[in-house]
Length: 173
Image (cartoon, rainbow, N blue to C red; front, side, top):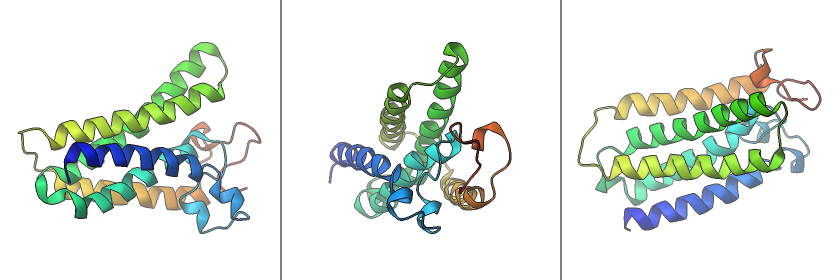
């Protein structure tokens, strides 16, 4: 499969899966296993799961579909995922810092923009002629992010980034 065609599929799947993951914890009856990969509250941290898990899942699937075509595969994936997560965080805190409150429409738009930006970066790195020797560290980074979501879902630090702005809770209610 051509990389460009694959990337279009990835973006669409990430849009759909990320949107669904906003609700799956509640739909599951607040199942503690579902909590690992679903947003359990409205904190910025929990919303990063909506980008991380779909992009990571598609990266794993893509490893079987297109990895053989590219040597920068996991490096591109890690950089793209981090870019998407960083965009959401920076955009949210910048606009809410300026305006003084958040707007759901901007938060939703930032989710879609983050995925598009992250996948665009992945595409550009994978189609670049340059080779980067960061495959192993990239896989370690993705695993570290997964472990962070696992740990901080159940035991989040008591800082603003992890705090639900609606009810003031941290992690699972």
